[in-house]
Length: 89
Image (cartoon, rainbow, N blue to C red; front, side, top):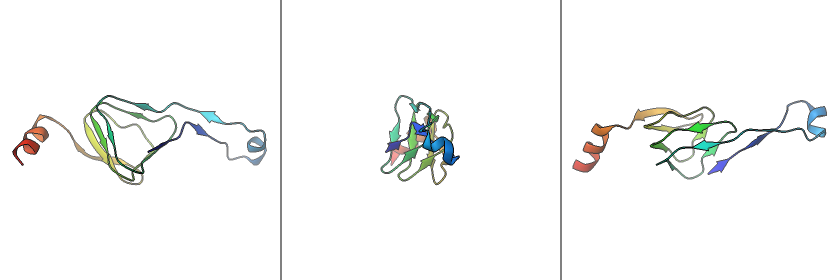
């Protein structure tokens, strides 16, 4: 996982001044993040979330879901019915 907390301006003159924009990455409880994910500055990942391997998370992810892709998007919700199906299998 590569959480990025700092971004840089596009303007060459501001980059030369070493001006950066720091933003926190917030990760909720009971979160599973797959291998080689990238999480961009300012993103919040909710509680009970699974992030698929290789995902690039550019926007906030709400509670109780699976997200994946480039850029990451919601693939499905996680709820009580999901747990029942997994327990039967």
